[in-house]
Image (cartoon, rainbow, N blue to C red; front, side):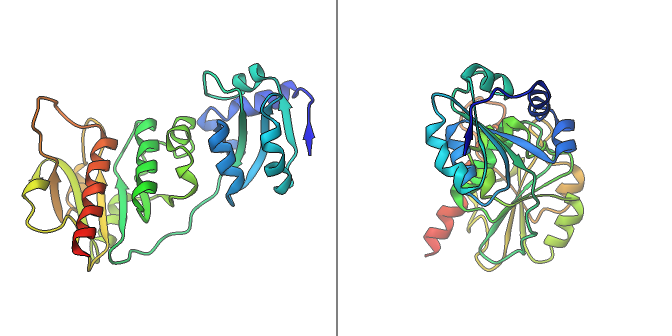
Length: 263
């Protein structure tokens, strides 16, 4: 099923509104842009509201939209770019429906990422991609962490938002409960060097929680009080700090390497 008609001004306005948080909240929907991400969205079980493709690229989306029972709307490449957040998008754009993930229980040997007031959308998207790469069980985020469905988050995640359970929680309250059964490790500037740890970063006998703090302020005081361990990545040069996504990636790699060494 496809249509080559130009969209109406009202529809154009409705799609453009999804670039803003208020519009996403009002419509309970968000944008997914680019060929790769739209293909992954259509192949998943995530709800899809509409799919737009340029005349030149429409053929590669027809089968997938048809299987979903959706009408593929074919428009010009210039109009397609004007609808989204990308400077240039000449392939496809989809409107996806917002959905909530089921709460995940904490299990031994598995890891949850906890984000304390992470504000940069690119960082959040990168961390989603890292969590997907390393097999993190879920992400829990404070209520002040940037919105999951921000277009920059979705773009930076490269489709990983489809696979990593993401929950917005009262983080101090959530950690207080998690602390009773999990090792809660926080990435801080003044913690014990990961190179000096005598054992693994996380125990294989307990669930693990890795806390990543705000880009400039780090982990807040209420969250810091919930930490079982405080660790830092050793510095060998002159940089003042590490990007939150980079720090998360280094620590996730150590978690997986520790697990492999344990057999």
